[in-house]
Length: 437
Image (tube, rainbow, N blue to C red; front, side):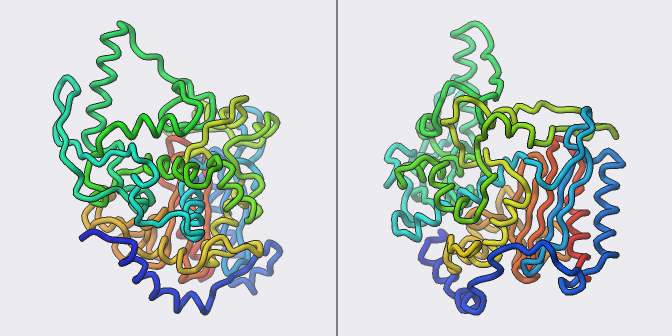
């Protein structure tokens, strides 16, 4: 059954009664806290220390930083390992990490500020603002790249973009694009040069585009891979959302996200781009391979200080220190407020973080649920047993993770900068919850 904004809004209203009892929370994170009064003790903290140091000692992590706050009290904020192994520069809590898909949540919140302003509705068809968007679903792709389509069962809405169920660049569309690439190769006679990814952070390489608009206009010419709302296909939907923020707001994505989210929250070090001297703030990238730490390319951090700074993705591109993003997480836990600023209303936060937008069976796997910008945990699927059924979260490709758990009134963040790694985050998360046992 198709979920409309009206139906999910009615569900969200049921949460507003609860929200009225706690519409605000701590407006600043408190760092100098007495552990006992915050519900933990030095022994529990030492247990987290020991675990995280073991990851470094066993070469499962090059550098890492972890952050835990309950009731706004920061009970854990420590870094381990090396920011630069070759230079023997120790990691610190102030280091910059590449956040990749943690960008998506920030952009999703920025979009919802436009909804609250009445500039757009979640169930508006995307075609209302981007008439060129496809309303056809591909059904067959021939060997020469030609294809057949049928009309989509329903129009793509912004709810579909927010929940990665739009059908953009999904299913058989990849076969179309590969056939096109083969045709170009045959015509040119030489393979296409692989992009170097040196200008900003991009999903599809540097290409020749200076603006997100160019990529989204090119993407819109392809049919959809499935009917909007019928399946889950991750990533590119938030790029389209980012472009449409530009269309609706009249500002660049970077300008609007700063204006509506980053600046009000005091997230002064989170950005798509920086001045050249900021490059020394980034941890270097390594992978864990056969018990060793192997240096990786730092093209993503280097791209943040490029001279050309016109390309901003919605799906990735933000970077920064862990404490900055913790402010964003606390705002969500506070039901929309932080730093004396109301970013969103409690009912909007409830709509984003409590209402599953996906069909019960989807490509995310058994029990996978996704709201408007966040994975929703439930009894069937959660990272560790201690996580409550009210928690929501997401993460980034290089190992950055976070969780917001309203029932336990806590946030926890865990940052790595490793393309290849072991799944150590759940081990940390278990210890984070044990801090309060």
